[in-house]
Image (cartoon, rainbow, N blue to C red; front, side, top):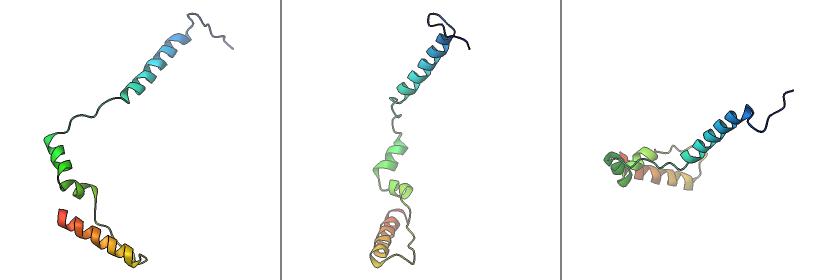
Amino acid sequence: MKKLKLNGGSWRPGLVLAGLWLSSLVLSGCAQTPPLTPADETLTSGPEWACVVFKPIHAKASDDAQTLEEVRQHNLVWDDLCG
């Protein structure tokens, strides 16, 4: 088994590369998102975003009366906004 040389041995370049790689991961976590385009701002500022995010809900036969009413109300709102 080879002994590691602590002063100038062959392990140092690998350690430096590992440190640089780890630093790049940490620093990329601080990256900012790009600014919104006018199309993005329109999508997120009006009711159109609900048509992308939410979809109609389908009830099951096992749902109780309260759940069925909530599903119906949700779908009515979705129809008004997106239908």
